[in-house]
Length: 625
Image 1 (cartoon, rainbow, N blue to C red):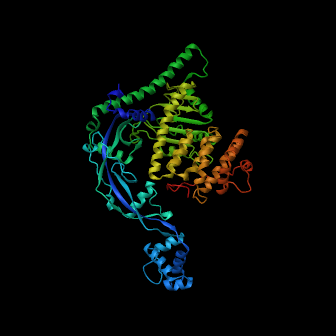
Image 2 (image 1 turned 180 degrees about the vertical axis):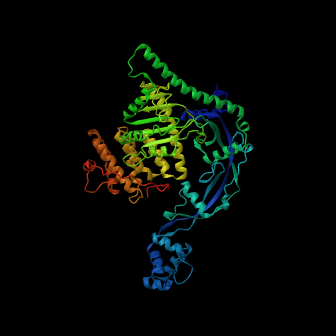
Image 3 (image 1 turned 30 degrees about the horizontal axis):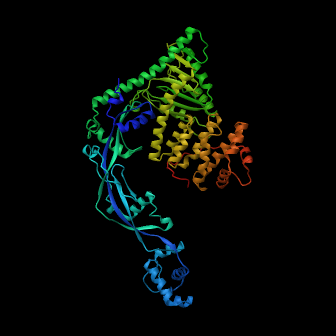
């Protein structure tokens, strides 16, 4: 029996945060949650700023003469040409020299800065100064600027620095180069350094000694039962400090800090909790399977009809039922088999998977029994994994997602969230002899039981997809991102996939997302009026007409709109409704549709066959150009 939350070292103010973390996944348990304080550094900084104004007619003539006349004229010569009193010309030249647009020389000499401003139809104004505050955060790992000073409020919390040495690795403000400071100001959104508008910070100086400001930070110790892993997480509010969390976790793994000292969490307590949680998770699985067995027994004893119940299958019945259930799939297949072998994954089985994928069925296969992938005694043979991954959608995307999940002896098949096969049969690794071996499987169609099993397995697949996506974003691995989108698509989570693309501004993935959607449309798993389609259409305004991915994007939208119109008469009207005036303007701008087209004619045109996309370069694109 693991500890109740009341006995865990969890600060009262963090109880809601703990509940939200544990609600993310049934495999997560927070063992401790404490608040600390640490110090930021604050410096007042004076910025010198120069910004432009429109030049007047005389200023324009003077600068233009200095650029275009050969040789450049003197002030008197230019006054004579313009028919003006030389006093006016000399006065204006002196002003332009003060503004460093003209050099202090004769004849008239335009500076490089003056030429730059002249090209924009402006001259610089006299510089002025602004005071801002630079905040150096050693745990956040950044320097930020703001217009107002932070309040030096008293924070009555333990000082994190008493338990771990916090190195201020960030350079002092005074040692920053002007270019680095300008970039930091651009990121601050204060509007003080806008070089495209001619507003430029030309210099800076630190005004006062460094001030120490206390800030609150939250520390969570989290155990993941699926990974059998303990992790430390530092947060500022809802924001996770990834780099600082990894740093603190590394120190803990090296034995350089003590969780007992940090949050009164002993190794004995951690081990006790770990075993209790793992036992509970295994008990949950066994409880679910036992519930299915009991229902099957009751059904048989009461002689109830088998539809909507649990039916026990034995030995030779199992393989036949397995293939029948797979063949019945319309939308989705989830399989968990601890091992995978060529005895099952033969040419006939691969052909069946290809037929299902061609119909738009999403297929996810999880495997593994050990707690760590490197500890697997019977890992999936690489050639079998390659054959499974070679099953493609009509657009050339991976049609079967096969991945290691591990730490489970459950053997399950769930089809369309309506049929659940579970029992002792190794779905993808039996030896093919079909002789009685005492195996039994339950075929379940009771909605509540199927949904409970689905939620358990789908959550594990989603957790795997999220880890893949995080790795893809961190490394800029395009193919890894494609795999993630395909898993999300098979789970019917195309909205999650699109949100991730938006959040990371990875618009290069939009054509891939459209091909994922095409699979969902084929199987009627994605409604034609999906909000995600509307959102995806709104993103077209962010795509440049010369973007590197414009051709597959064009093909994707043409295919999606035509497929929607062909599936059903009702979808045709929905497709037309999606093509609002704003969307149609973008279709024309990006050459998705032709000027000679109308929305009705556009969706009536049969889609051209798509060629499988070439593999990405592995470069992470940010934005639509």
